Image 1 (cartoon, each protein chain N blue to C red):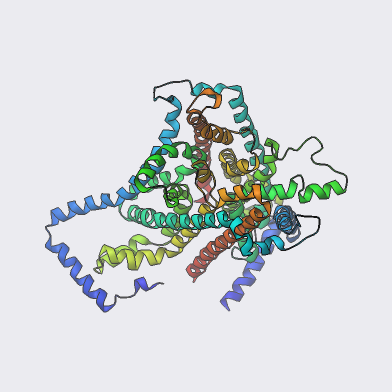
Image 2 (image 1 turned 180 degrees about the horizontal axis):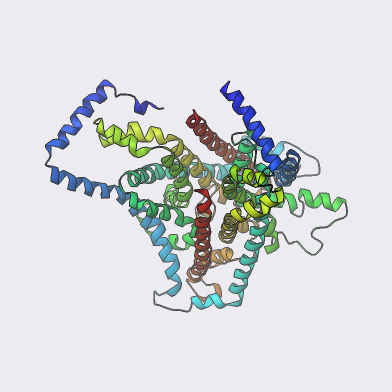
Length: 314
Length: 284
């Protein structure tokens, strides 16, 4: 335990004995009222900060889509969401997110399964945990570099495969197009799955397996009747989180794709950089609104699934 | 003694678990971790090999690494070193925001406003739903005002970063808050006559230092990796500079990326150590 619990030093004692005195001296009623007020005042810095840098930007991002350059109300920008180019970007974003989420979830769950039974403080476990956090939360731009070095035109794997007669770019260079996002995205989705799904897998109680064994169940019946049904909500929840993660991810795509705007975040970049995409201003606001709608739906579903998961963890 | 019997018991449990089928066999674990680990190592190896490539002609060389410290070339990397400085400055200011604004608020809510705990949690999780790319659309007008008040120094970007790290920092501190019986500790201190100041400094912060440290480290990692907001608000940080430099000298960009990845890995390894040290102590 810490120094904190040790009896106070002499100098501290003097301070402590003087404090309550002052409070007792003050009229009880007033002091209580003032303390209540002070308590609420303590919340104001955080509230102020969050309102200005989270609340206001979010509202602005959602609302600017409804105004034109002169500040007059318009639904013009919102109709952008029906534009074939924008719809195409949303479709690309959807399928990239869906594919990488499914692959990431399956591979990540497999890794989590393999990690069961490793010592929680062991070297392998801490290595995997840290590496996962780095790749899932830190990668961004640097993952784009990694994949240019790997499967770029002069990349390690590209050249090696060419040596054995396989040309991965036989049908054109796809790394700097939407399909090129798949591998880098999977590269950060799998680690994110490991981080988010591992607690659920560790939450499986050994008594359930023992009960299954004493009742004559097999390995198959344990997984099919107990573990998988219990894990399913949290697996689906993690899958949704991965989808949201890929859907909102910007840095890797921005570093990889410098030409064009094939997915929604890149469309936002395009409309922020030049105010006249599709001949309208404040299009970024409309796109942001579209993204938020998708994100809110996904995250609400995620939290519902999380609540279901929590039932087994009590 | 106790540790030894614990270890043998753990060993037995493992073999039982393998028999019942809850855990993978050693071979299965090796195959899965080996294959996935091997595949995931390829891009990192490719990066390392890339930095060793000889740009003129074939073969491998350390010249790209040694070139970093060559004073004759230093002007070329000036921008990158400035950017590293900017990112470190941003990391410090963002950590300060977390320490000064988030930590006291979380303690206050935990002790005095139990009903607001869910609200605080919700607020801190919102940045997951409002991704940086959406936030930046609304941040542009906000920063027009911020620049008028604080000037356009790089550190002002930390206000936005404080929001993006909110979910991570909240989780790290909350884990510590719910593991320590903060209420009993502070009531005990209060009943012994300690004022709120000394409760905070001598009771709460020492007990929460693990969570606060973890939150600070993850904040540093997230800030050093941030690209979206800096790039779209036209600021210069490590990641935006990496993209710029990669167009001129991809070798240097990849070297810096490798160093940054390694640095983040070490930071997160330290967070892990902090966590497991806490667990061990509790077991005693």
